[in-house]
Length: 305
Length: 268
Ligand code: SF4
Ligand code: SF4
Ligand code: SF4
Ligand code: SF4
Image 1 (cartoon, rainbow over the protein chains, first blue to last red):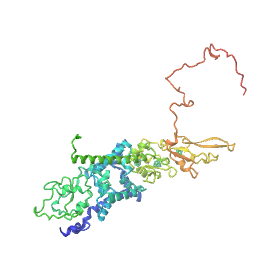
Image 2: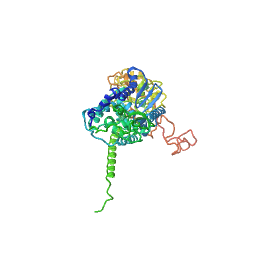
Image 3: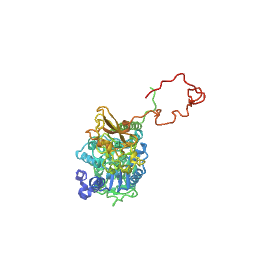
Image 4: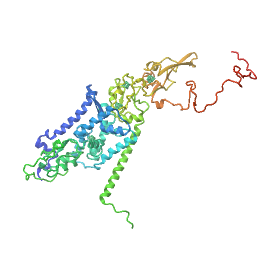
């Protein structure tokens, strides 16, 4: 075991690349999340109406409609045949995420993400237990349940509790008691279940995961031959089961992270001192050949998580 | 003694347990959600939906809670319900007549803005809107019913003389004045709430209520004889009409006869 293994998570990357480059995608993501929010707030706050509405449905520059495809789907199942405007909006959003990356929504747009990220960060700092870890498929079951309940009750069922649209709408139109709900999610992720909400419960994330099954934007462990088993990527990744198949693949096995659970957050790219990971497209399947096939870095005992 | 089937392999047992657990969890979560959905359908009486809103049950399947109608309402009439503050399904648009009524915009911008049809685009004349029905709920406090000429609710009504009229009757308290009762005609009242907003009393004596509370309904077989000429049971039973003719006391027709007695003349 080298001295380096005792460095806290992420410090190797900071030492190797500098703080900014070791937080590049984190910063970009926060900027993107803020940007999406700011666009919506620009109207009500300063009267510049680039975007009207909320994440559930909006109108861009007074012409382009956008609709949350999951909300739209529930409305259909609940028995309402929406007007063309909403349908066009849903198709646009659906196609965009199907092409770019389903759970890009989670990491780059969703306003709940900073909350659950904060919970995870604190979870790590406090060194808490994983807690309740339901099966990966739980959120898919929940998604199916939501659709069935929509059909049975004739309502857009998930919108009765959906913290994403509630927070977003709250910031734009008025909060009410949404703060309590956000606090509850933070505490749930912190004390009850690590990565509980986004990793195991949220049917919206599950939905976008399905949508992005064949999406273009992928993280690739292309440079995996440089991996020195520091395990930092596993610690920061919100869905860390997606890493192994790509990182531990041998020979010509694809280095792409193909699991639809990957949120394309790019934390692994940031946190890796050896620059193993990069953003690329799904056809870029060749791993970087190790420079000297025999001179791979000394593997070492993994850090106790 | 007897083997009940073959013993399950551990994996299979595990799989069945997991599935049962997942299914159980989903039923629990689904029931909770369905219970919330039932709750959400109870729209409080003082919350009115925007013009053209589908019936409440359909509205909840259609409105995606985007707030575009709220944005395009020039009078800031509409609000999105806030979680835990308003007893209306969270995020759906509504208004409270006593706070800000609907001004019945001619171009109905809220309906035009709605992307889903939760506000029915078939509504092209705001006078056909049915947001509720005004009811003069408190005759004991209404100034007009007390014999004064307040008339405010009548005068402000955008559909004056159709949706609301003043019906004169004798004031039996004073004995020689009239009462001009503000009277709402549901066929024409749009439920805009301008009258409720304008009522001068500290608590409005005229209030817009959802139609389900404001209105009764008459039984299907009732006919108002003074309104229609058509026979009640046309085509079903055709009884012979009793026309004047032979054998009756109609003297004009041949065969008529003088009745046995005559009633004394009534002097006016
Ligand atoms: S899983 Fe759900 S709450 Fe989490 S980031 Fe994705 S959409 Fe947002
Ligand atoms: S008709 Fe006009 S005032 Fe009434 S709710 Fe619609 S936009 Fe607002
Ligand atoms: S515009 Fe339509 S879908 Fe959007 S909040 Fe208003 S009624 Fe609902
Ligand atoms: S609610 Fe009042 S003001 Fe509006 S149409 Fe009806 S009677 Fe007139």
